[in-house]
Length: 228
Image (tube, rainbow, N blue to C red):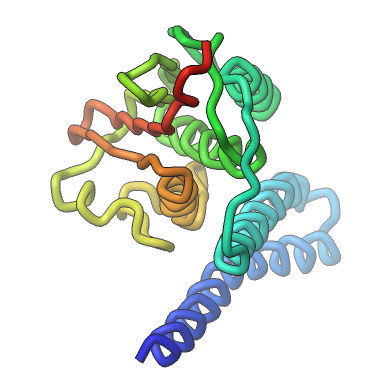
């Protein structure tokens, strides 16, 4: 039964990936055809090809990370300062979204967590990228100790979700109808992968959202006991 379930899951993944790749590839094909017929008139269309390639690149990266987690029997962890995780996430966000403002409230950055830093940064990056998609208002990153864990909280003031949408959020390849726009992009893997990474580290990702007011995603990871 477990083997059958795994095979079924892999087939579904391949079907979903094929579906998600088809749309940006079709847009790239149309852009190239227009450029061949009218190079001057296709400038605006060609400008969007970069966004399509970014979407494909993000999908492939998320799939490779997911495959890595399925293949590895254990995550290679080491002590990593919270400050290092925060600084890298902030730098990446500001580089990728130079016109956006990221408000910060950081406490406990002198603490450390036992983690795979590449995976944990990927989870945090995915949550920050999600927040940047759904609003032009400033986003916020809050980092605070919470008992024996450290909380990385990402807050956006965007479109938010209904209770029904919130229940389905985190399902691979699912996006709310309101988010299926060219501006937001995404393929619906970021949150699911972030939650999977958090749980592999003994933590979790918890969402809270109100339609029309925004969403809060809290990623919690256990702190190293006895560490300063």
